[in-house]
Image 1 (cartoon, one colour):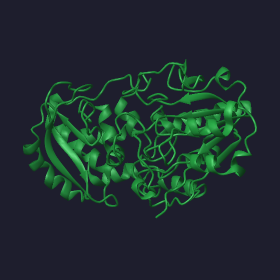
Image 2 (image 1 turned 180 degrees about the vertical axis):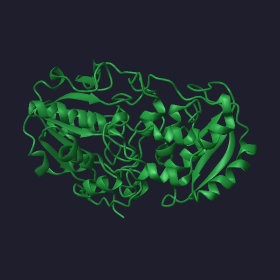
Image 3 (image 1 turned 90 degrees about the vertical axis):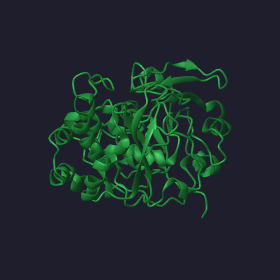
Image 4 (image 1 turned 60 degrees about the vertical axis):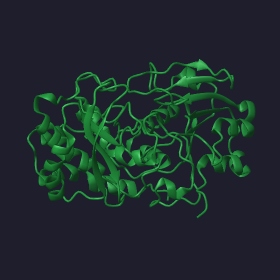
Length: 396
């Protein structure tokens, strides 16, 4: 199977595409914005466009993808090697200002998303679309694969009452879109007005592909997503950011493992097995373990917990699995369990877990040990509308 050609790869190889862009260019990128040879896209685009590439923009975690945690902002600066201004879109502003956009004719967006609603890069992009729409600047999406495939959907639709920077739009948790398709959804259904938009589509990409199928090199898109496996488990384990249960940050397998200092993993495992079997949750193995976070939650304290080993990606339901695990952990840990309190992603009033869930219904479901029927009732809301809207914009 040939290597999938990303939007970036096509732009640097196809003269007919290059000729479409005549003016000054900004580039929204990060460490995973690389060619198939692992050259950073900034180098490649400077060769193509020279001095017309005048500004760099970075998302959450920074242009160089070094910032670990939420609500840790990055600053603007002049890059010491490229000698270009680097504007942070995770700073005092999430939206590019008029000053940042001044003089630009095109902004290229080249971010590796991970296919989960809670991941913020799609919102950096839609905020950019809104800012550029006001100034008539063209946004060009250099499309990249959805690493957990672009056909599987899972999870509830976001209730707009719980909109935040970890969920701006009414989409499910596992949304089944590429960055270019999210941009098209935004233009057609969510935006107030239309921005000049071009999507440079991938060649050779098929919706069923996992990242390995593309034959492209994996570069971690944020500091705690080091593996493709973690992109799959992240769909569910991100939920634990709203609790005092560790999602494995401070370990070498972050977002693949979870645990708590008061949990005896092997004994609890015996209680879990019939619950997970009754829910017909498949496609994974939970391996009991003890881990020692070196930073963040429970730093320096041994935590009992589990590594989620994915054995069948098609059958695996990470969101449902982690909701069920959370329900059981909540009742097992009792007073040792805690919901994270605000603020979270600069929302100072709503519960962080409700922002992650995109609803308060799932928190209540956990607390009252709700049923599968109740869970599915929460999941069904708005799905038909989303599926119809999604089908109208698909590129692949």
